[in-house]
Length: 202
Image (tube, rainbow, N blue to C red; front, side, top):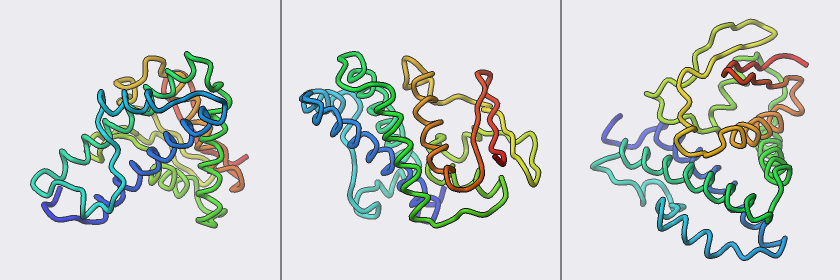
């Protein structure tokens, strides 16, 4: 990566901020349910680092742009996994509650984009403009089929297993986000247990 900030750096930082917003929404729901999540949040900061929410140009380490962004990804994914697991363990939220937060996040973003037409690959690209899949150099997704009606890809490297004790929870939540994102487009997302993913016309 360049020593100067470019579109790719803002692109990654915006994806990180989306996931920070998901953490905030999940903890706010726990608070509404009567659970004091402040100690949990503080513990997550101690273990995985503080969230960063300022302007990228004011926060980033210019001497280590790639490493700084990678650490922010590790931090936000670790905190999302840790906080979700603890809230579920303490019955502060339900699985469906978190899935609903992800679904509504995806739907709200697509509503703001105002996009409801395009090819399967267009929507694949849009999904991963928002969902984290490590750094671009990680090459996580490998497209195996691509047509006017569907795009199919395999997860070549599952980076999320590094953060989630129960990886099925992560995929349940992220599947909800993607289907919320696609809910008004005429496309649907499906994923199999062996890491095969598809966006196809409904």
